[in-house]
Image 1 (cartoon, rainbow, N blue to C red):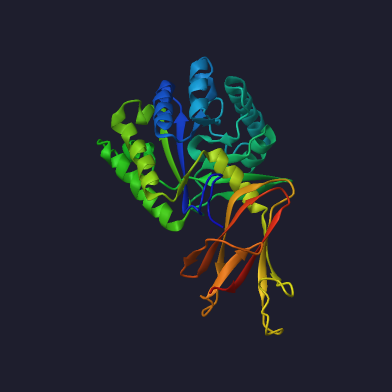
Image 2: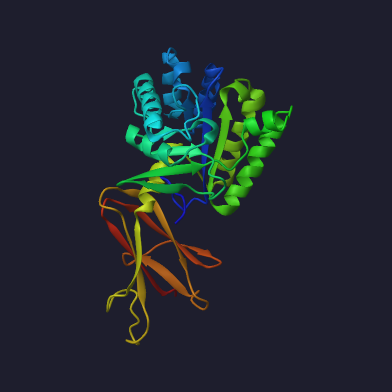
Length: 336
């Protein structure tokens, strides 16, 4: 199943998050917030809370442009510490962001993008629901980790950020950042994954020279038309619900739309898609791989024809929105 969003009319090919670490020169985050509002998209901000607590106006500016997560209270690495130590540190950062913005934060951007099992557990216990970090390139899409009965999403960053370009690679020209972002977008889009375009307040700054790279990314995604541009929290929420979505293949009901009327021994099947009892999901699409020779089959959803998309391996079928516990039945019939 592909990425999708609440107002999508078709399955998106990939997802895009604009993220900023709010650290030194934290006031520069206002320029990023202004750019996101100008472009009509929402981003994700991760302040080091002890640096920003006295600037109440900044909290309002960031909230108006997206979501505000945590990058801990003091930007000290937590990976490798005991669970108890991480629990104390992450709870403090969670509480400070909640008090600063008035909204409990969902996301953690761990210092140095490093985390371990204790980080996942401690952030979940604090009240968070996802991490944004590197995952050793295990996957181009979000991962789901079970924390008891809860699920924690890890959103991986695969694309170079401004630190990689200007600090590690020693680039001097702003165009190098734009090139790095766009090259990363092309790779992620080809895989149908998640593109995290990240920056730091003290590196990308507040003038248009470097911020223009973010503008180009957003405009490129809009031109290509098949990106879901959303906050990291929205994507993590969708992915957690997707992880508990049930997809099963069942025998077609006798006399139903997928039954073969003149051949009772023919193999006919349907695909049942069911949401969990505890959550809803918007914009669901299902990819069906069909055997060779089945190109003449067309899908129905709950017995009604739908505008599906042909693929080299089969069909992509729009299932639509699922309320808690609801289900949709996809049938394949000869397309005449």
